[in-house]
Image (cartoon, rainbow, N blue to C red; front, side, top):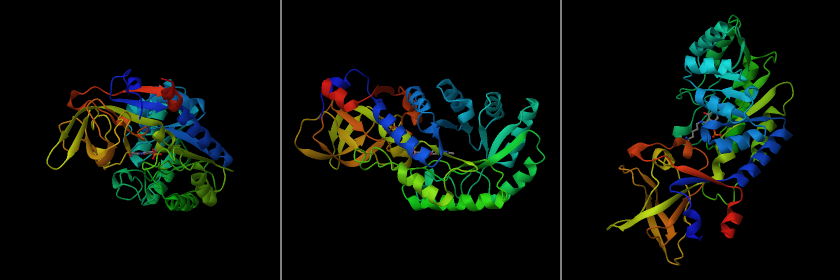
Length: 388
Ligand code: LLP
């Protein structure tokens, strides 16, 4: 339970980021990657808040972008162009042009047509552009079906046969420099055997496509999950186990560079959504808490049925009750969770929705013409809250 005053400085709803925890997380991830000689690109799609981007860039991470605007914001916030990669099935000519003009490290190519378009644009600029082929390895990531990206039902990447054809083509496309392969099979992956399967498959595919070991670059994507059930006990994901799992199959970086694109695992636990109770209402069947954040502020529960831990930060009540926590949006799916056990909750209380640092702020919208959420940063939330 905390003092209501500290929350009054900001208009709710807003995202509150613990930059101290972010730094600790980055430190651990960087160290564990370095022990294996691996390189990490931060997947901007998880959160492109400029304050967080600057911190991540300071740690020396590269950037993984999926739009021209992500490339732009990465450059603006301190990521070196030669550490930026750009993936996506639908890169427009303008986006490709922008990436090439800014001399980014590598484009992850996802179709034969795209390869030809990249070559055409590079040729107009008299440049030779580094690309990696994104392979769809047909692996079930054992996560929510909507965030699975590497099965043959998904739109992403090339099959191994298409990649073989792409390789023949690159040998005649004069403005393409094929440097390696890219894989990404999904997000919020918590079972290490999935990463083991990915590493085995990547090794097999690499051997098949590049028997003489010419590729200089392999990117194994992101996907490492976080603990949404026990965020305070597991605030930093098990990067050691993750990299060790990959390393047990692929080995450490030797003749070629091995890269990763982590999003959620780097920023997921450092953000929470702060929202205020507008009304409480009891019907014959349910006990509703209506807050000022909605599916427009945090879309994950409505879109994926995602579970986020919810706490009442200000209630002093001893009695606990079961609540359905809902937002103000005119949609039935605008519900953060049902049967949430909280101390008796009243109008004006502050509710915290935890583990919202990834795919929270970045997926917010102005649906129902509501304002976008604000954001605030604390280097050490617990001390600063105690002092206030
Ligand atoms: N690389 C590529 C090519 C990706 O498509 C993704 C995520 C990542 C890296 C980063 O994955 P991560 O380490 O964050 O798992 N909006 C969904 C998540 C969608 C992820 C899509 N791709 C959610 O809220 O759960």
